[in-house]
Length: 407
Image (cartoon, rainbow, N blue to C red):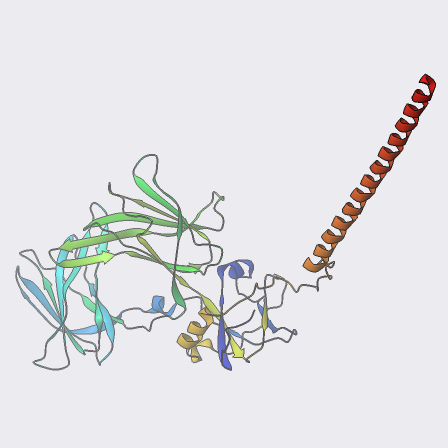
């Protein structure tokens, strides 16, 4: 493989396609990166677990709670510092409710800045069981949050705690991928929709699937399966849950994405049920893949070979910590890498092929053949002329003898 032209000396990364990962050992210990002359190149591997999945909400301190019966419940929390957060999780044992939520922020007394005014939380059992207690908002680092839960003439819910979602940097190893839809149909019972798609031979492990639906409000049971082969009957179930969109006036709560552990499988089957209207269409699915990168010190002009697929290979410790590098820069250049076909085993040199006639020699051959055919034609014509002259002479002699006899 040859990296992009002009790549400077220093850390570089090679994205590992799913076709490579499928043939490797689970620990990828059989990967080998060598130069074109066979010299081993030390490298480090990025994690298989995206950082964004590891972000868990942390508890904030509720220092004041007040309510106005039938109107609202107010909760003030202290994040204990100017911490950048992207959402809140309202902890409650209450059941069977839908409530609008407003969030404001402040850094001190007398301040109040709107963060979000159209949040919605819910815990419902019909027609699909939905529990959505998170409200996400734009990033901010306000220390204090004022959360208002609107009761709308209903009994207030009991709030036992508030947690905040920390901000996490975007993962540069993720990228959007496309899906070629192979089937999009209703099952024979008419109760479920089935969509089967192909991620393609050149792909990266799927991490997230999101839907874009024109329906204003819906809730569907969703099961996601994946498979290595389109013809295999055994599909691996990788997710089961509910996708939904709830609205109350202008407030909204939704869960439209499926997050899974990155898998190298090629084929995707999504089964949805629980409604009469079709939720999915070929152009209503957005997919995100997450690649693992092999990071190494690149030397300009050097070509590399990546070997893999040897279950008997001795596992080698990966060198270095990939997190110390600027992954955004490495990934941006790595996506543009011009890669040759990786090798599963070292390939012996191929024997030289027999020399094929060039266009010039072929032309010469055709010209020589034409001349030979012309000469043969002339020779046949000459023979025919001789035969014709010989026959003419015999005819003359015969006529002469006949004339002499009559005299």
